[in-house]
Image 1: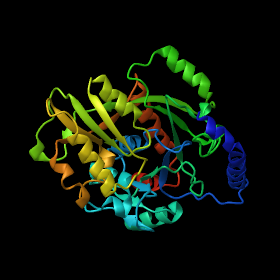
Image 2: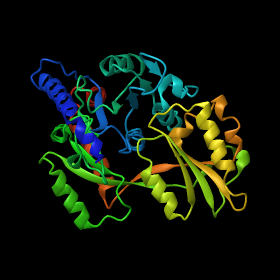
Image 3: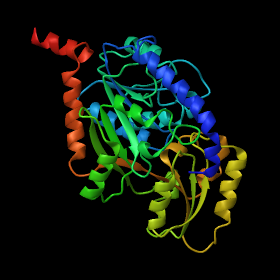
Length: 365
């Protein structure tokens, strides 16, 4: 922890009291939690970001859409619009945010909606989207005005919430004990090799309730793909690269590329950063400063590319040898199969009032 953050304990105490009071008012029923006749699954975290939420949302959508009519609802952080918007293929990050644009690019057949008021958003989705079975709520763990049927909490392997502190001393948006609201705890960004001892030690540290299940996932990095077809496939041997990121935690990607013996120049920006002309100039200068000999490229993430495409500032950059590093969620051991089975059974077991139940009831009459 940064020693300077210790000076912020008085502010953290005030923040803690505000969070505690808000949650207590929900617990007592003073603030109302809304339930809906559509199954809702929340995917979120206690920290301010970096747990791999978007790749996991994509994973769950991919699984659910094979059996159910599924949609995604996000706040649309960083967008320049307000209210309810149903994304389409022409939506830009300024309209709906970079994460929803990325999700929509993966699933043309899945409705993606942004609305800062989740209750209002769900109601509108039920009017707009026919035969809707499941809504995946992106980053909704703190949005207690919606009471989800399934609550999935993500935490990073390298910095689990039990080792963190409340804002602004640490990175937690609410105390670690509030993990009790979760049905499933996902430990994300694990090493690709996870020993049974490490797994057991982390489970003991998180100390889940008897009703909670813990799963372990890691990020699988695919082959670098060009942003422009004219660029061609990525060289088998990369000598030097400029890594250009604006995500919450780029360290795992940085270390992965380093392990490939790529000499990196890292231009690192905050999560959801809106790139400026100065940022673009820095990128171009960093690339042009690399030695001319050897295979030199630019590497960015899928999420960052959502803020680059169709952006006039990046026209010259996209003509350079720039490649996207795709990321996919994978699970240790049998966790992936067990998770899919648990969620599917959970949906079917707890859908008494949902559209899924209504449809099955009609089939049985």
